[in-house]
Image (cartoon, rainbow, N blue to C red; front, side, top):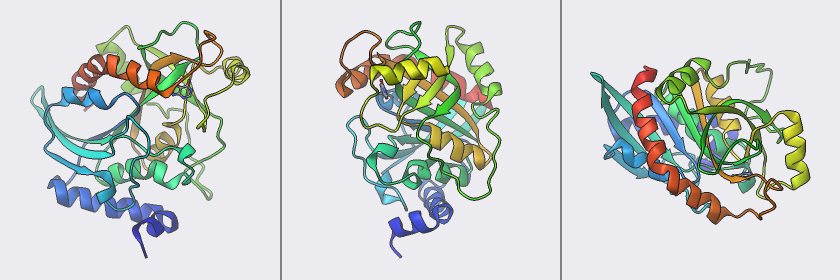
Amino acid sequence: MTQSELLYSDPMAAATAAAHEIIERTGVAAHDIALVMGSGWVGAVDALGTPAYECNAEELVGFLPPTVEGHSGKVRSYIIESEGKELRALVFLGRTHLYEGKGVEPVVHSVRAAVKAGCKIIILTNACGGINLKYSVGQPVLIRDHISLTAVSPLSGATFVDLTDLYSKRIRAIVKAEDSTLDEGVYAHWRGPTYETPAEILMMRTMGADLVGMSTVPEAIAAHALGAEILGISLVTNAAAGVTGEKLNHEEVIAAGKAAAERMGALLKRVIPKLF
Ligand code: HPA
């Protein structure tokens, strides 16, 4: 059986196999935390220092080559030393999205592998459109809750997982204590790859969504179902469709991410040791 056949026929076995490879390659028996760096966030990892290990994700079982500009497809292991603690962080530079059309299994494979490699906390970062008029471009917003508009779940079978505290209240409180200017919002998950229409954005605002993006939700559900605590942070890279009348483009999203990367990286570095 090929690696990608295993991913689709037995996704948990593929995640476990990838985790064993990560453990073997890094020499770290159990990582503590994983970070998934989305569009525009890749520069934020510079704040974590020099990685102790790096490889291309596609070298590991079940990972697909990256297809989106701004996503580099590397997996890194970092040592984060602070306040007398030594933590091991697994960092995924980039992710697979539902709009790539390869199903949900590759979308959630990295977080499943991370949890199997020991990670108890998963930080999911993304770029998003701001639906709520109070947000400005370049602003990070903590995800308080989500609305799934894709009708796609990474789980199947009678797995009735509770999502009441999907985006950990405990972790959000710690992050906000570190940076009291941070706002929280509800993230609407849109499959893409088209951006939304102005009418769809109006619908989402009416439903109670503040942010819209094409990632994070399946990964949050898959990792939570395996027992991990989740922090989601969205960077508002543009006003959502129809808010300003401007057209949306991916270059704008990447540029806004690059501009905010330093602040985001510094925040992550300060906050991670406080979570343990
Ligand atoms: N919509 C959906 N996804 C996005 C957006 C948006 O406006 N900006 C960045 N990712």
